[in-house]
Length: 220
Image (cartoon, rainbow, N blue to C red; front, side, top):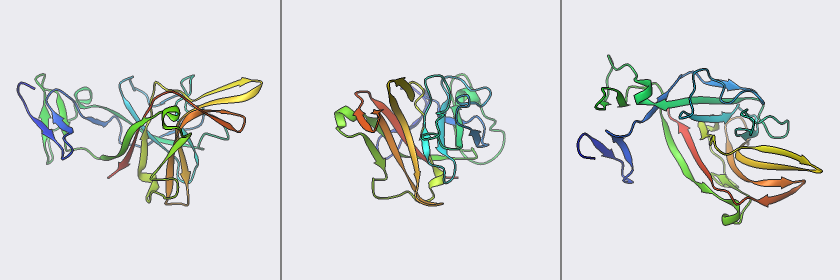
């Protein structure tokens, strides 16, 4: 960066940079999707938006985009309701900063690329890449396969729009399963299972495909 401002966190990751816009909410109202409804479903969304989603409270199920551009729809896999937010780059949102306290950064086009004056915030809980063939495991669980997140309704996943959950019926049922499975222990605790495999009947076949995942926690 030749000029401007750059701020790093204690892991040397960029938090603010004049050349990169942070993300804000297209709408701070939590949107709702039913199984099989259009993905993501909120009017005005564009391909570069980030979709962060979770299963409805106490509703187990898989959060993913289907190959035909819908939220996953199957009685065994889809939650009864999916809750989601749409996040968009600040330089496209260009939020109003005429009042309030905080810190705002503009780029050379006078567009906001960062503002602390937003209604909600997320923190990154975990991020990585899962390839079941390379990892030699059918799925991975967060926080682990034996523990649970508390305040589970605060945990969201970033839906990968380029990888699809797909059903194929060729004799025996084969299911390509790529996404996040929400499992509630009770009304407040749960875990997230990251799936990346093909299910053939009851057998799981490891899938040699990189699934980039991210889990977030809503802070406010």
